[in-house]
Image 1 (cartoon, one colour):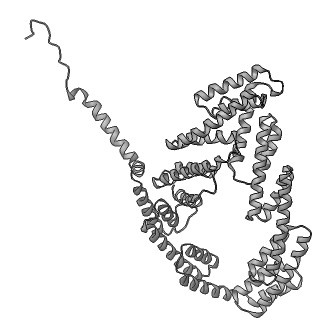
Image 2: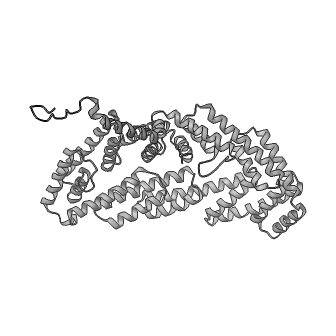
Length: 497
């Protein structure tokens, strides 16, 4: 019976009944998200989960016979990646040992089947993974015996003697090496190799006299490879070292005299023949730094074509110097700054100088040291320096920015803000590249980046670790532990799909 007050209104739902459809939908979405992200999330929150996964994948690859694969899916790559993430885990070392034993077994099988090249590859893998030396040498001896049985040794002997009689020592030496590999200690082979080496080494003094270091380098290296103890080598090596040192001295003199293009050409040639010689490496680096400094000066004067040539020469020397990279950034900023000014600085007015200094002040207040390009304090200051380098206000601004950048680096390091510290360091270096305090700061910053990389590698964040490695290497390639960290990171990345 209807109420006298009219039809009753339906009472709204209260409490949890009102919201239960939304709660149910949210719960379903959460369950789906957790199901999809459980592995990446687990590996991010618990790095040990990533190591366990790599160990399991290594075991699976070993069981499937994938011992060593360039695509990172081999058992070796998986166990090495696990070891890179945590070198204290014994399971990774044990896994690598099992891979080495499997490689040795395959080498024996390949030898028995007459697949000698394959057997050598597996023996090399067993050697790399430190299988006991006695076992590897025994397998190598069986391989040599199998190779001897399949080669016509008398025919090989005849070819070696004929090539030597024709005076071609470089072609004869590999033949004698093969002869000795099949018949170690053979007197005729040893005497023939000695004759070939003597013929080869007769060319070295003539090459040094003609200034042909490349030929002398090649022949000396070939002789050392076939007989490191040859009696003529020490004297010839001493002659070669003196000739190399004389060439370095001439190249250094050219660099110090400001003939940088000639010095770059000389060190480029020297780098091809002696890339690991300390004097060559140091001279090439100093020449690259001088060229980078010249590129910076030319960029400040808006002489962009000449700056490009100097920078290209610096890079051609292969010196991994932060100063060279910074010179490239300076050149690009100078181009942007010139485009913003809209005209060359030579006929600049006092108003243009005032605008540049005002822009410098505004960027300093914002903290925009070197970014954004064209509007940063550094770019505004460089524009002012190009307009009036000796103006007292310009010189004062340069001192202010250098001091502010140095203080910024220290504060950012204390606050553990490495990216800010990097930006301030770059500004400092751009303003005062010869400041002696920069070297120590650069080393500290590189070490901090390396520590971040180590932390991120253990957490499995390989991309972040790679960026930290690049930052540390760009600052100081000689940072202790850098090469070892890079190798472990590369192993971890190789095993990551």
